Image (cartoon, rainbow, N blue to C red):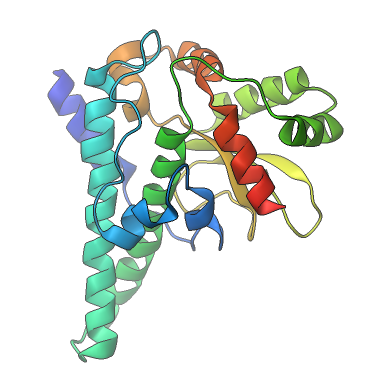
Length: 235
């Protein structure tokens, strides 16, 4: 099987999932610069911080992930949203047999857009140190940064799609959450702080089936300044 056909397969098989947006505040949490850069607002892909991350992800790995998967999700969201808006505003009917599928596609694609923006925004060539606020919150919830990291990596290994460190405003707790599809797994109202994409399209060019190696190296490329800004915004 060629690399191209495998990418095509992974893109098609990622599909649309049922559910609702991951979190009400996700567009704000996705920000590592102006929130207005989100594709959900502009209709255009948010620019990458890095087109490659030496020692972790090559340009050959990031480019199709960004253009085909993130870009494809954005195009799917825009198309579904426009179709639903036209049905409401202009009275252009959607067949009842397909209406639910369009609704689910819009949700799934929107979540994919936001999660990809979180993911691409938080990675750097060399990790930074967690700021006092987020480190203290992690230590209080998980016992230590190392214990959190072990659980986050275990969550990522168990996930088919995403693992996410989230903050929940109802009880003030942090959670490592496993999500196997874009619209499955999150806690309602939870604010995502750190996201890892573990679909095969995120690592297969550079790592083939060595998912664990990809997850381990991810931990060395976290921009904790971004994570801390997300945390202080959430609390």
